[in-house]
Amino acid sequence: MTNDPQPAELSHIKVGQPDDVRSIAMLHRKAAQGTDGPMLVWLGGYRSDMTGTKALEMDRQAAELGLAALRLDYSGHGQSGGAFREGTISRWLEESLAAIAAFPARQVILVGSSMGGWIALRTVQELKRHTDAPKVSGMVLIAPAPDFTSALIELALGDAERRSLEERGYFEEHSEYSPEPNIFTRALIEDGRQNRVLTGIIETGCPVHILQGMQDADVPYRHALTLIEHLPADDVVLTLVRDGDHRLSRPQDIERMRAAIAALV
Image (cartoon, rainbow, N blue to C red; front, side, top):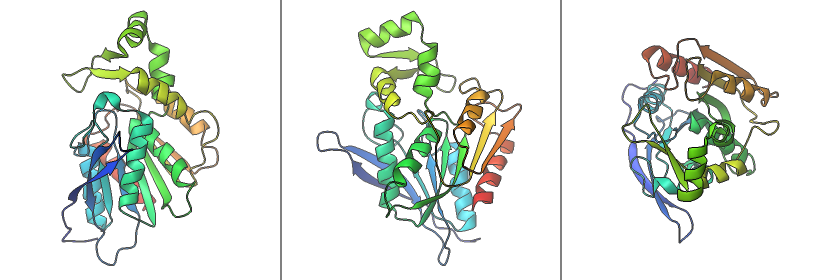
């Protein structure tokens, strides 16, 4: 542990083809001198940013342990450029991989919340394809929402939403966490079908700890059970929080996250 952690440093990288460049904001904390542990990587949820409660707590834990930590804002989120309505899983995955590559590490632990859990699962798949990429030594998935566009959103679409998608290319939905409505685009839904992971065995090659609230109104806890069925080869721990909601940001929930991270470190 270190008693004098340095502050996380803000930087930006350009991601995308020349006609589709996005400026991606990142906060990186260097490892303490002499520390040889994994870099903690925060992958946030839909419409969240890298300064949320859980992201900050992950960074604080990294400082306490002397570990490197990386957080990023996807395009259209927080301090990053790009239009939110142009966001897709493929775009946000590309940005996450670019951010990890910008701070080379031997090992990483991916901490993904909600949609970030889906991106974490896609990230480990992509990193395993490259011999020079860091090894994912563990994953903490908080209320993970893999394949949410097809498994949760599309299945619940009514006639009005389908008509809005057809005519306007998006539909709006009331948000419990913001005065602004959630916006789901046709591009997001169509791209989501190309990034599904709940189609067969997912081989992460590392231990996985899932934290899931049983009062989650956005991602039913049964979705976490479905995910486990697709992780038969991994060491998986599932913690069901009987009174937990989707955010899992209460002090007791944060302690569960910290314990899960510590166990993987």
